[in-house]
Image (tube, rainbow, N blue to C red; front, side, top):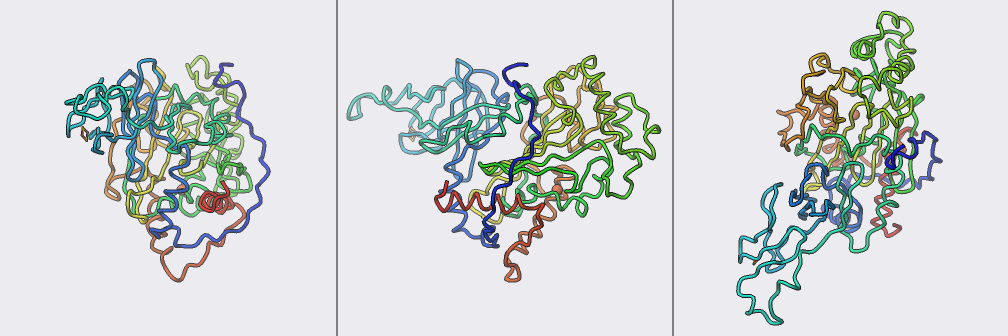
Length: 456
Ligand code: FES
Ligand SMILES: [Fe+2]
């Protein structure tokens, strides 16, 4: 095994933390005061994903990450490491870079012309002799931000002395390394402004109780009952759900029948769907065996460190403070509601999809339920939750909701989020009444309270 995957992803159930039962009141979703507390005690303290590392493959490549009113320039260095700086000229506070990304070997401020190199050092100042203390070039730098790369992402932390990265991301880093995300391509990079607080969306990903009502079509190929799924909550506020895939839901309408897209997934692995009509609960294990047999010859290198369960199932990580990573055998998804710069009743909802770099993406029909896998195989296209996309790094797209789509399932989630935001403001709402399977929602708000109230 390589150093990225010395251990397989564990499946052991983690002992549930004790919940205090903190009230989840509506004001958390609309109060400006609460929004500012989150800024001071959460956003400026935690490790967060700034971007996708292979977006900046060469020295001097950069992108700008925005979190509320802050802007961070993330730049690939000559030694291929990555550094991050506040996007602010230290002379008089002008914003330094006004584009989303690019490649520059110097950053020149448009106000008085100060010029910085990619390591943040001031290399040119107009009239250098006119400064008390002499030429500012040798002593002025852009203010640096802590920065790391892992799992394919660039991570930053705005705190002066942050919690060690590995501690903060435990156990996610260890759990997700076997997927080899750093070798994947981001083929989808969407953002939509949505009329709800960012936590409304993250709460939604912290429970699967809504699946039978809001996403009934998924039961054809995903187990959607809490009875057959596993939920884990970890010390740092990260949670996960292990949900069997590639079989119909046991308590659903047709637990023994093979329907689309499960039939396509079987065919893709040389299995005959008719052999499983009437005994469709066997599809998951049959596909696991076929994948183990055929994957290597088909060039599915990304299965190398995955367990049998990972060849069919959904490993769904809802991480603190606001990102969800849904790991499937042939791609993974980031869903992330970012807080709006000024309005607690809006957010910027991001949807990325990452797929393995392969010459030939064979039909697999695992995640998206699309019927276009036959077309995408060998065509230089990849399946994504919004349909086929070029198998190449994606440009950032703003989606206007609801005219545009963030993907079929994500659209269903958003449609509820907007109504929920309105209801949460009502005097008719007091506190959530949660089922046990929704404990991750309560837990998540309690971790936010821990930060705000000084327990973390
Ligand atoms: S503010 Fe940037 S050079 Fe003056
Ligand atoms: Fe959903």
